Length: 283
Image (cartoon, rainbow, N blue to C red; front, top):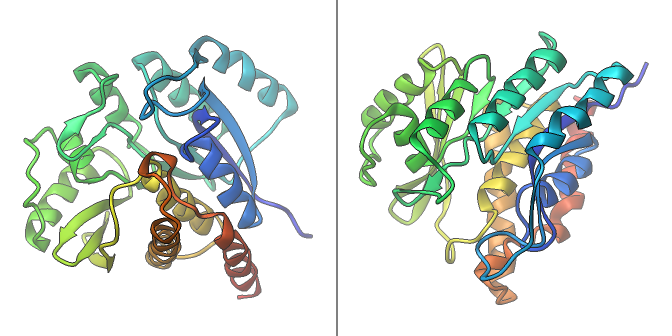
């Protein structure tokens, strides 16, 4: 009997700027999976713009998902993104406890900073709290800045060699995640994504370095990984698909001169994710 898969995505909603839930919803849906958003906040547009509307959903989240609990919902995947407070981390921990079965694939994107700097909303306490979400996660996808924060070591942009990355990833594995994907690693003319598994095996998957940094790139990348892994792809193939999809989106965004704060023009390639999903189902 056919059964459509479902992923609960816990993240903020930004009406403009292509990030967070407005990225995850179309990508996960295009892969043939029902995307079930649990918003942590509502923004008119993300905070990279000079002005924005903001509505905090912290004290609405539990009421919101209590209705899901009454419906007896379960999920094939749970994917967490930006969280703005210790309280939200506690709510997410409770959500995972209530809704995750042994078969649920848990993806944690520990959104905390980039280029050696934490985001303005981050406190030391919140950084530690976010680290607790690694326990039981199937994959965690920090960039190098976030990996250093989670490992409690000073940021160093020159952590690019396999032995250094392996040592860093082992520290993150000790937090409880089964797999780590450290994203956005400088590899000269390429960008590397370092996969490290609980059993100590690893690999580096690279793609060409293109254009300027764009808002929401990490959300696009991890949303593809979430969709592909829940659809049954290996983590390696999921990261390769995320690299391919993100690379094509960056190229098109540059060709169209889309402002960096407006994110990636990924919409024309969504049909390709649908094809990938169908091929995986056939296999």
